[in-house]
Length: 317
Image (cartoon, rainbow, N blue to C red):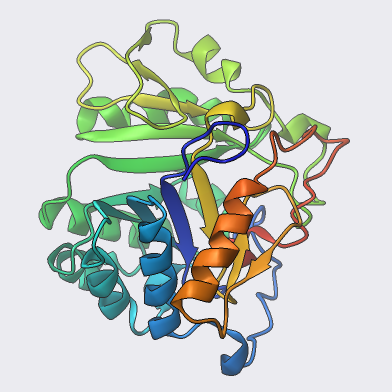
């Protein structure tokens, strides 16, 4: 479906849970989140119905997110059914990787095409700090399980945080020379749940290019990331700049929260409820959400916080 600004909306991000087995500082509170009543959340059948409605409007790519999607007990069934929806050509999943040793191969068998794994630092102490409760050895176990399961085009996501991991840009980028992966650096967004980060934490994607003068631009792969490659690398460096150089004009995505709200823009508080509706009702709400997708998300920086109205784990990272 085409929105009122001529963008073709083909990408749906579905959050299957707000819960997570980590507590990343830019994503959720230290105490976690209050578990909502089961009746307030989308059921598996409702999720699949929503995906069917979205596919009927031209959605072809699906990304399963959370919270942490792998803590969802029925995640394999959700992925298997989603991959079977007519019109869905690609099912991707974003995870912190902790549970991949048990689930990587079953996810592939369920129809998941590609994985994105979160890795903000390779330093064990800093990893424990940014995740509050995580151990980096668990990430690496999940990463190797994903490689062993045969996943190709794995993407590693690092949120750029000034004063925290900007001194690791070179070492993180070097992973593309060691493994067949893309390393993506994402500008930290001023969400409502990140008050502990001061102005210096928000650094532009150009800091990556400054640290990697040998990186050369390569053609885009259909996503919003600006792509570069290091000499002899097996994968690309991706730069995602929602703050310093927004890409709203080419945004092709909408989001569905675990409690059944369609968000046409991550940084808008506009939401369109789907829970309790039949296929036609969901389709009508999706049409409305797509048509009213805003032209851009407005100013984002340390002085202008996101208008999302939710923590990141409540939207879908």
